[in-house]
Length: 141
Length: 293
Image 1 (cartoon, rainbow over the protein chains, first blue to last red):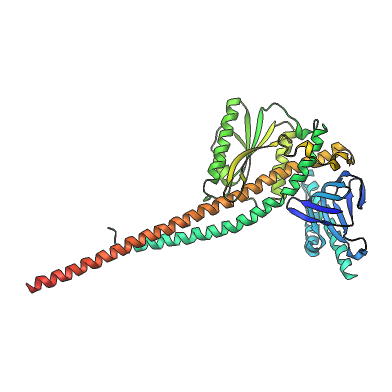
Image 2: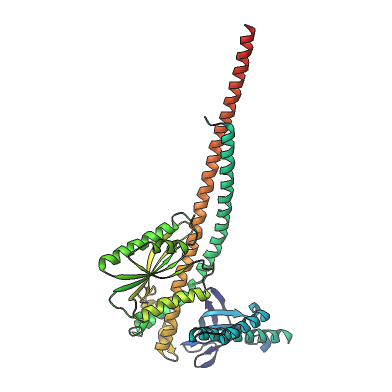
C-alpha cells in the first residue's frame, strides 16, 4: 500500500507502508491494504505509520498533522494536509514555549477572532507535543 | 580627450558598481533556486485537490457551494502581486501593465473594482490611481509565504466573495514558466472551478467509486477552501520565483555591461596615456633640436 502525505510545502512521505492510522472527523480510522475507496476529512491529530507487517510497536512512526483531506483506495492512501511534522522534526522545548505563548495569547485575546486563532494554535502545539512524546518513548524502549 | 586621471576615476567607480551588481546577481541566484524548489513542492498538492474537485464538480456537488457561485460581475477584487524592491528588470512593469489593462477593461464594462496589493511597488503604484479603491496593502512578505499574513489575505478574499461584497476575485501575478521565461498573467481565484485543469473523464475510478464521509458537501467544503488557498499560494510562489529570476538576469546584464564599459574605458585610458607620453617626447626632442640650432 502506497502512502503519500502531501503538504503545500512539499511531499513528506511517498512510499510503501503496511498500515496507517488517521484521525478523521468521524473518529480515528486505521487503513490496511485493500481498504475500500473512501474520501474523508482529517482533523488535527497524530498519524501513525507502520512500515512493515512484522514491525513492532516501537518501530512506528508518528506525524503531527493539522486538518486535511484523505483519499483512500485499494492500493494507496493519499493525505492532503495543511501541515505535517515528523517526530524527528519537532523540538519539544520550543513547542512547549510556543504552547505557553499561545495559551497566554488566548487569555489576553481582545475579541472572539483572536481567541479562536489562539485556540487553534494551542490544539496544534498540543498535537505536536504528543507526537514528540510518543517519539521519545519509542527511542527509550 | 579626457585626462588619464579622470578616466582612472571612472574605471574605479564602474568597477565598484560591477562588484555590487555581481553580488546582487549571486544573491538573486541562490534565492531563485530556493524559490523554484518551493514553487515545485506545492504542485502535487494542487494536482490531487484539483482531481478531487473536478469529480465533485461533475457530480453537481459544487452547484450550491458559496465559493462556486457564479454571479453577474458588478464588483471585482483584484489582488496584485509585485515585489518590494526594484532592480528586477521588467518584473514590476509587466505586472502593473497587466493590472492597468484589467482596470481599463473593467472601466469600459462598468465593473467597479477594489484592489489588494502585495509588495511595495504595487502599493506605491495603486495609491496613485483614481479609479480603484484600495482595501489593503501587504509589504515585506517572508520568503516562504505562509502563516498569518497569507491566511489574512486568503480570508479577506474568501469572506468578501462569500458575503457578496465582490462577485469575482482576480489575481494579477507573474507566472514562472522557467528560469528564462516569466509572463505576467491574470488568473481567476474566485468563483472557484472556472479553471479546473483535470478533465472529469480522466478522474480515476477510485475517486468516483469511493464513499464520501461524512458527506459529499462536507468533503467538498474541506477541499474547496484548501484548493483556493493552494492557488493563491502557488501564485505567490510563482511570483517570487519569477522576481528572483528576473532580478538575476537584470543583474547579470548589468555586470556584463559594466565589464564592457571597463574594457572600453581602459582602452581609452591607455590611449590617453600613450598620447601624453608621445607628446612629452615630441616636446623634449623638439627642445633638443631647438637648442642644437
